[in-house]
Length: 494
Ligand SMILES: *Cc1c(COP(=O)(O)O)cnc(C)c1O
Image (cartoon, rainbow, N blue to C red; front, side, top):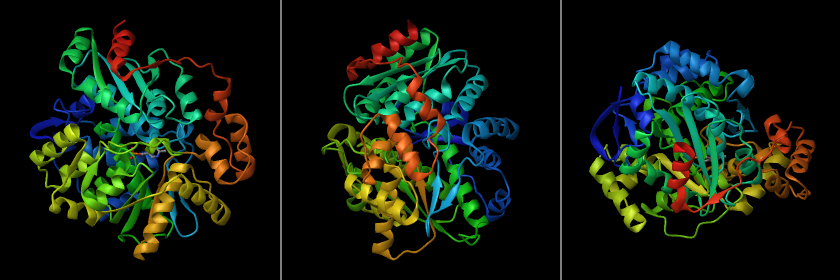
């Protein structure tokens, strides 16, 4: 299976090259030329598999230049019990709805699913391509990607990793997770501005030919750990199939019946992975795209006009504080019938005017698949409180946005299709917001708060969050977006 580019159908490269490159030279994103066909029989086979087996099976359909044995070895290491617990992606019934908990990995957010695996895929890809350069991973983060990428790549031979996070734009625990990162090959800095500034800076570096050539001459080759990298998305496709299997096994869904999937969305990666699962054969009726107050996607899905010219808000769900949702480009490409010229036009308008309006045909294609809505912080807090009081379910602020939007969707449409809501982070990463939402005392250190939340909920504090208290902060710098290149030059070339 080969990969093409959202802005140029003429491109056709192998999976390992697409993963290594991260983004196409013209700024476009890679997608498979066609999607694998997962038949009901194939899904039936997955019912009795373990999570690493399901993941290896699904990922193998996309990454055809890796052998089945290679992928099985990677997924059993990446999703081992020591990293993810006994059940990596459990589906929990919260009284009518199913929640797919994706936060049991080492950094307590869903991004571990991709970023625990990506180092194996990337280093193997480099080997397959005969590349001797050191691979430098660049990541812009709104909070969770950075830590997950650091944890995945720390001390991985032949790689180094450089993370940019928006100053003041993450939760305190998210910040500490990154600034205390151990490892010889890691670099972290805050950047003045918001996530979009950091992400645009990283994207510009990838497409800066003179700079990437300069790095290459110094033995360094850049790759991306953001969800623009296809290697980030494909492991996420697997957990939607896994969730479906679990829902069938528990009797929540009849085999073959469709489900709805609700996802708290920022960069549109996680929900796009769900849509790709459907393109492969997962029975899904509707996708519910949930945003926080930065509701650029809600407005887009309603109106067909994407407009990033609007105020940017810092919210209680920082990993969704995004105004440029990169992976939407992949959806536009797929739903426009792989019309690369059309996508190029939209992306040029986005970078020139900050806005574009899609054709009526494309807009109808989007609304046929995607419902949407948003929940501000007050609404999310009210949802956290209600979910805990009525269902004894403790949701983090991101998950709460999805629960709120899903409930509103169900109320307004009457659509009672069995549904799964993606739960993307541990509530302990956001203890202060969660305690406030529950109407409890939210004063004290982050560590006092985690313990208080544990007492109230009866859930254990994730050990890797508790131990942050004793770890020295290694990276306390903050730079201007314009200095990202020189930060990389100094850090990587020396
Ligand atoms: C990254 C993140 C999101 C948004 O996911 P996208 O793939 O960027 O849409 C939602 N919730 C949490 C906790 C995250 O870390």
